[in-house]
Image 1 (tube, rainbow, N blue to C red):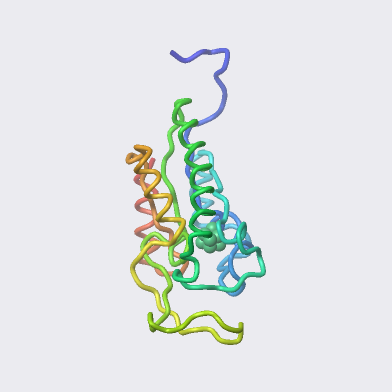
Image 2 (cartoon, protein in one colour):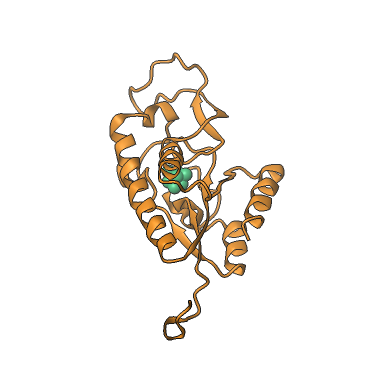
Length: 192
Ligand code: SF4
């Protein structure tokens, strides 16, 4: 039963977002598609009066803000996986605690097209057999394919292991594709 002594204005609803949905400054240079926040998404969520949890950016907290853009294979190392797992464990501990307190976790919204956060698509080298590494003036040709980024994989796997199957995962497109945006917003709308 609700205690009137602790009743306040909170909605008790929270949505979890990839860091760069609220801070495009975290993205690899050349890939920010907004000056600050991703306005269509954030404006939409603000109107819903819910709490917005900004998940830590796995890339910035491992490689910093002066990093180069990479394909998934370059992030797919035991060291970076362990880093992502640490972040995931911390996030899911908080999910667990919020749920214990009666809060509703509406979903995880992940930035698509990222080798780390991508839920539906990730960048790979056009030639998967190509040798990677070397000096910075050499960059391989990239293409987007279906797949999940390193952080997205860890978050999905660990959420399932903890029994959070009721929390939906939603992919937010990093490219201005009307069909993908419509799909993302219809999924977000369905959360409310
Ligand atoms: S997509 Fe993920 S890893 Fe890339 S900038 Fe956004 S939060 Fe960081």
